[in-house]
Length: 158
Image 1 (tube, rainbow, N blue to C red):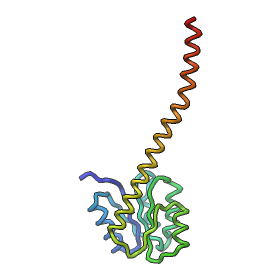
Image 2 (tube, rainbow, N blue to C red):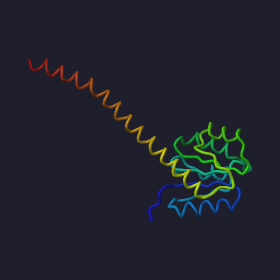
Image 3 (cartoon, rainbow, N blue to C red):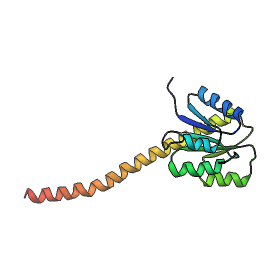
Image 4 (cartoon, rainbow, N blue to C red):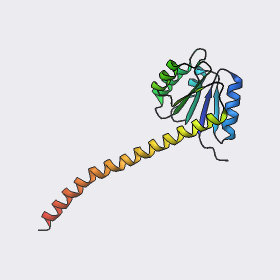
């Protein structure tokens, strides 16, 4: 079966890591796990993952610090924050620092699946828009060049 994306699940609770990784693997994702933020940073490489699902509160390196360090290396990876201790302040801070979404524990697997699918759809749309913008810029720059070449050619043929 072809894998549809690479995901890292980061949580200091082994049961959460197992449940999420087994579920994501059943959906067709290739999953790597990390026991905390420090472990995740040791395994993380820019471009190696499409998505990171991370707990907020962990020892040594917490989810917000992990998010900050990941964003320094890779602006494109999708980052979902999960927590059992939700607050508006931490949710706002996570989103400001670049998290795509904020999920509270206990969570329903169907909700996690929907949020992951939406995040991939948004990323795909952003990538398509970037490609279209590249074509538009290329077209805008090429029109004057062709006009100048046409004028030069017209003068040469006189």
